[in-house]
Amino acid sequence: MKKTISLVFMLLCVAFAANAFWLSARWEGTVRVGKKQQTLKFDISESKDGALNAYITAINGKETRIPCEASRLPGYYQIEIKIPSMNACFTGKVIDADCIDGTFSQKGKEQPLKLLCKDYDTGEVVMYLRPQKPAPEIVLDTHGNKTFIEKEWKGNLNFQEVKFGHDDVTLAGTLYMPMGCGENGLPAAVLVSGSGTQDRDGTMFGIKPYESIATYLLSRGVAVLCYDDRGAGESSPLTGNETTFDFAKDAQAAFDFLMTTPGINHSRVGFIGHSEGGQIAFINAANDPRVAFVVSLAGPAAKGRDLMVKQNLSLLDMMGMSYTQAQVEEIEGMFDDIVNIADTTQLQEALRQRFASSTLQHYTAEQIEQSVALMTSPWYMTSIRLDPKPYLEKINCQVLALNGEWDFQVDAEQTFNTLKASVKNVRCELLPKHNHMFQECPSKLESLNYATQGDISWATRGLILDFIKGVYTKKQ
Image 1 (tube, one colour):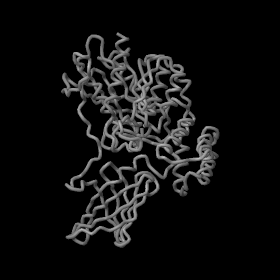
Image 2 (cartoon, one colour):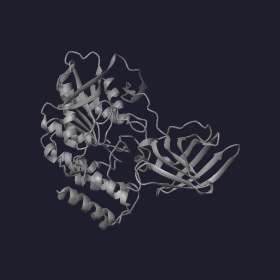
Image 3 (cartoon, helix red, strand yellow):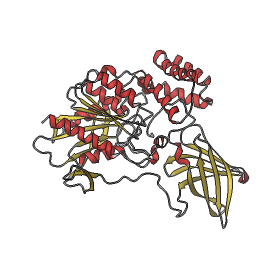
């Protein structure tokens, strides 16, 4: 999903970012005026159509509320706030759920300004994230009713820093290894991240979803290997020419590492893959009969071209935006060009023409060039041209496919239909009110805002655990 959110999307509707709704808040920072520090408070509100309204309150002995002109700049998470009456302007980039970092300029003088999200009453920094609560245990009473009780983890938990690799690639990660492997050894999984460069924890917006999965399974007797992607943490740098198949080699190296690790039952090793990581898990399971299981967390199963067409239309639907059949064909044509035009130079020109004539949105020259560069990168072209079906048909191990009801990036129905038609042993589970990051959300619109929806749900973690336990029980 790797990588928003540390997730890389290429959506046609560049005007609005999926995570923009958390701008509605009070933001506060200080600037220097002469020899004194002056506190500035920006109250920003956002309408459903994405329009921004803002006021600034200058605090310097007295408070003065001044109207501003707020707008988004090209690209994700960047905003501009003009204050005409002060001959001043702030431009910044939203870098986290509680921080906008940028520059304040007034009368030709510039200085850095960091805005933090503040509580209206207490003045303290607000973190608009749901807390990561301790994992509850589920027990049954004498009548078979479920009861949730909080329990401390018991036993020794082992976190090992490891390095492995292949060819000239070195990968660094953490092996979550329960102590006391028993007579038959432990089941184990490689956790493969989604598109984009992510660290081993999947860190984004103050949460660490991959670490959450790993520690949950660790405390319940399953070993997990998480690793930094190329270009993140202590792993090798990116060259810029990598494709899904290169990242599949990295995941395979992690699998091979587990297959040589003492205490692991080598007949119980599989993959847990999120988004593109799920697709990578499918590819490796098709090519390696030793893979015992695959857990796909919104792993794409449809052709890349079909996936992206559906993704764009789903986003428009979730935003409540209408579109014509001609605009559907416009979206389809863009991805058809990537599939059908082999020459990269010709493809770049064709895409420029499509962006320039788009009826979905007006694109600036800079936006067009940025979009064309991404869409003609080796990774992107490979993703659009990839058909997972031949790999899916070769998978013999058990597969659990989880998708969220409110996932606009990887459509559940499209994914499940393909998997059921192609994979011999697949179980598909739809999680109600869940988004692409497997966060349980209060509404469909809020599901787009990954920054405020908290950690990966306990329902997701429980399904993963139950599935792996079922697989390795059968392998005893």
